[in-house]
Amino acid sequence: MNSKLILGLVLALAVIGGSFALFANKGDDATATPSPMTASQPEADTTTAPATAVGSPAIDTAAAAKPIVLAQADTTAAKPSGRFKLGQHYQRLTPTQPTSSSPDQVEVAEIFWYGCNHCYNFDPYVENWLGDKPDGVNFVRVPAVWNPLVKLHARAFYTAEALGKGEEMHTPFFREIHVKQNLLESEASLREFFGRFGVSAEEFKGAFDSFAVHTKLQRAETLAQRYRVSSVPMIVVNGKYTTSASSTGGYDSLMEVINELVTLEKADAS
View 1 (cartoon, rainbow, N blue to C red):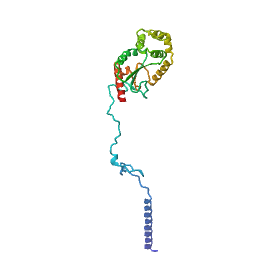
View 2 (spheres, helix red, strand yellow):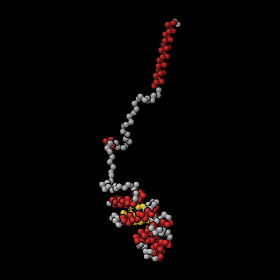
View 3 (cartoon, helix red, strand yellow):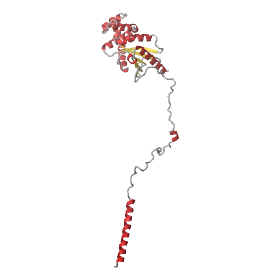
View 4 (cartoon, rainbow, N blue to C red):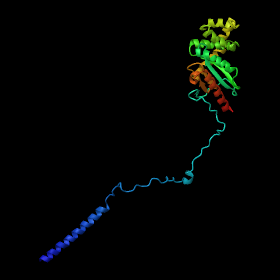
């Protein structure tokens, strides 16, 4: 075989080999995994409206853009704002407690103890207010009952009520303790004290141990729990608000708070 023929065969084999290599490289590129999105590539727009679920009505974008107006109660009859603040000068009882007064009356209850010096000092303010209290107000006194001596005085208070001597003996009871220094700390001393108001020993004993007085003492204990009584004197307005001289800054301002809360309750009822 001459040299030209050999050279031709070599060239032919080289061409065929190159073609096989080219086809192999093209197959590799076709099956290659796409590269991830790079930072230079723009991200998808995420501000489009949410898709509507199948079977649900299309979203009215014009209506959705309008503000939603909620129905509101008529506030034309605004409550009196006053100068005293809830949480500072008086507190809200939750839940509101039932009262012993008729529905058309605002009840003002005083929680007190005859042996309390502050109650003694506050009593003239109450008596003065009672002489000119607002219309539609029912005032009640509820004696504290947190220890044996306090409960003894509470029993004496209800005994006087049962005998029809409540108003007549109320202020003298305070004076007997705080002016005459007679603590009235026994049943015997109370019996003698009641005797000064025309109550016989038998009448006193009958009322003092009566079921009616016992029932009222139990109710006073229940109210002390419901009103969360921790000190006296304390005022409860309509079973809803509590206040005291310590929270209002004095007895004069306490009476103003009472009147304001009475006005507030009347406005609520109207």
